Image 1 (cartoon, rainbow, N blue to C red):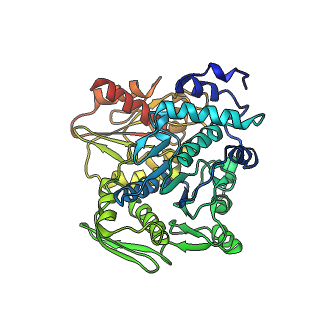
Image 2 (cartoon, rainbow, N blue to C red):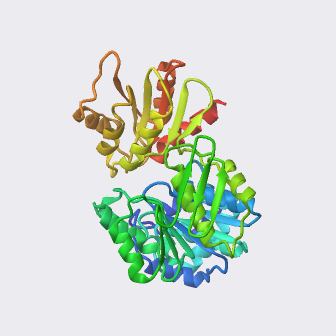
Image 3 (cartoon, helix red, strand yellow):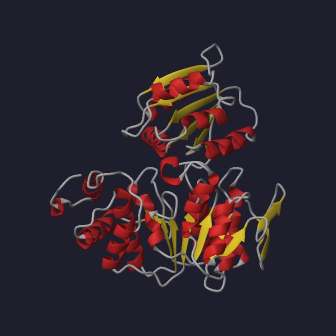
Length: 432
């Protein structure tokens, strides 16, 4: 924790560097501190608020909501975290990242309003983002949960529609080590008398019971909404509304129709406040863009970018890789945070990867490449003429090595932490 005269902070980079050390812990769950600063800032929304939580699929669902609503002509604010390349990605208005100067102004306002309250990096920056939204006279606000739900900072706002995309094991030190415990934490974003959507096909009983206990209007996948389709198009069926002959979302992957269905269920619940036509929905799905979610880059060898960093996401990545067709060898560029279930991720993908290019990450929380190598060895991943394990200091050097070795019939899968994918994207951008 540092004491600094914040009047000396004039750029976004200055502020972010300060905020990284301004609070004694990286993560501190709870709503009292951040709620008190929200009140002093006078932040409130007259427009609909959609809050999206879940173990995986949050970012995709938020991106689809944003894209469809923008096609409908609405002024949309989207808050997401973490960012991939630039901090500004965390707050977008009508698809455009907020400018540095706006962030600096918002940070100054949060700093003044917090008085003696200590806020974490996540809490401080989230408040700045929503302060910008509150001043922008938006038609709809979409907020992505950072961690869990019940005690996450975005839960200081009451969702008109709350979405839980999936429930699986992650962040066990904060949320518990069972789906039931985690489901209860995530259901904390539900509100009495308001729409609560869960698109996990096996919703935990704890989530259902909490929704019923508080009197939320719970929509469950396969009970209140579902989808069907063939290779060309798909259909959505909600409680009262159906949408036929929809284009597949431009986001690739096995779970994207689940995510799209959750988004369309939310929009059905809000249809009297945010009406949308069929063409606006179709166009929004086709035009949605979200880097790093089973993103297949053009060219050879095939390069896949995916921020899969827990076993549930790794299982989906496994399925998506299976659907890609034949590749002679698969090279993996993989780096992860040490608090993740790295062994669980490896177990999902070890039979699909021939050559592992392991990388350190530029944060104290990052697992070392050597540690990941030891976990691979424990799972009997070997070095032989068709398999290898190499360690690198950073994602860029790991990726450069993979490119030098991969043939045009091979593929390179860059996955794990956001920092792993971001490091490769930045390296590719510098080479272009």
